[in-house]
Amino acid sequence: MWIVRVPRYLRIRSPPVWSRTMATKTSDIQVKDDVDIKKEKSETGDCSIQIDTTPYTSVSEGKAEVLFPSTHDVFYNPVQEFNRDLSVAVLRLFAKEHQDGIRILEGLAASGLRSIRYAREIEGVTEVVANDISKQAIECMKRNIKHNNVEDVVIPSHKDASMLMYENREPNKRFHAVDLDPYGSPHIFLDGAVQCVADGGILLVTCTDMAVLCGNSPETSYIKYGSLSIKSKSCHEIALRIVLQCIEAHANRYGRYIVPLLSLSADFYVRVVVRVFTSQAKCKETFSKVSWLYQCVGCETFTLQPLGRILVSGKSIKYQLSSGPSIAQSCIHCGYRHLMAGPIWSAPIHDREFLKNLKESLIEEDFTTYRRMFGILTMMEEELPDVPLFYVVDKLAAVAGINLCKMVQFRSALLNAGFDVSMSHTCKASVKTNAPAQLIWDIVRAWEKGHPANRTKMKDDRPGKRILEKASEHTVNFECHPDANPESRRKELLRFQVKPEKNWGPKSRAKTSLFHTHEEEKRVRNQGKKRKHQNDLNVLEQTSKENKQINKDTV
Image 1 (cartoon, one colour):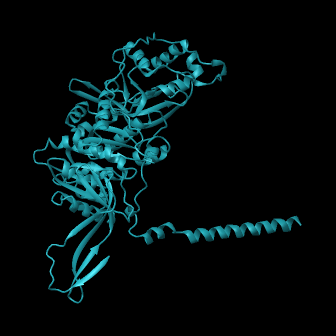
Image 2 (tube, helix red, strand yellow):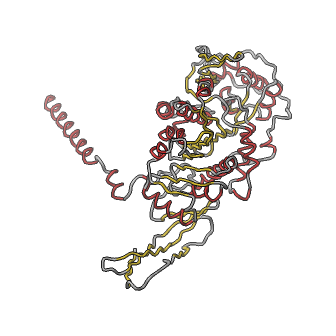
Image 3 (tube, rainbow, N blue to C red):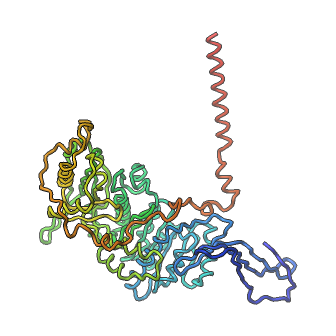
């Protein structure tokens, strides 16, 4: 920081600001030296000019350009551009329903990039509250808001996100849209979020703790989301359904319920978009929308059992518990035991009409990730809405110990048998169908007859051997069906993302979001270090005494 003192009579009406690019612009990211001159009065009465020569990293995305101090660790992940592009498209479509404009809250705004894009790229946005609890993030955010000339729309907020949402839960203070994109799990923010969003408003939630949601820590999943996760080939769709169940549970406590518009599993995160409505009567239907999940440990055949059911007879509506269990003690296909998980959301996770309108509203010139957005939305449209979870062809082949048929042949066999089939956007080799599990294994057995497995090397208790030895109940026809090849595949749409760069997963949490100074970070890191060292010395001393006593007794 340079400080230059000048006489009082030398007035600077408009402090100049200039920047010098330090690197050739070969991409949207560059480093700049931004020199900000600020006028201050010194103790002697002279006017002081402070010149800020901090180098910044410039990032351009959509219609926004944000500056990050190159000397600080700031959280930014370019892979998330797809997430932000899709969010802009969703809110553009939503904003068209509101003639008086919409108010948006971004609870964890960090640099403010997403909020700035909302302000500059969505017509009808009257206010965006960009909140973050980090002091460094607020400073960065204010700089970027000014840099993008959106001071009249984007309002920086330095508060705890939960407290901010609780402060705005009165009907006249609620936001039309609330966006939560935290580092890790959003569970601590959901209670406030479902209260501060307007009736019929939209809630956008991201989760990046995929290890928890995909079955590595079912106990942690229950703590955070009120649902047990499970390791499965369809774990990413299960993750989406766990999150939806969790949001619905929070909303129900306040007489509100959700309607999922779009549920996305991409890269290293899941993202759900839901509308929130108020109705005590609709809340009573929730227990019929969530189910327990039973999965065989041998062949991974799964069964869903709703928590309850609704019987409607004229004007009479009865709410009843489900009869159970819906499965035998052992799997009827391979004889192995079941694991139990959930409850998970078992109602539709997308709104097909919304997906159609969203796809039609996309403008290619506005989004860098347009091709991927269009491909993913097309796949979501193709998904069977009333069929939770799916099978994976590779897993079926591994269980049976054979090289199974091609995907088109497998889908044809299901279609020829009179059942529906689709893929899931969460997995390349997925088979989502309303056919019974018996038919799935009949198809495997039918293919194995022409392409025999080496059963002599299989142990008698192997799941695959038990399945192959059972009799089939259906006639299987592998003749190619005209609907076996989905539109998204025929048109060669970009459906599944390739790895965009090395080490492209979730980035480390930004240290500036946790500590205000390097000394504070160091103090926290070393906390308890001396005590631990002293404990180690005490253990060594005690061990030494015991060894001496043993040697003495031996002599």
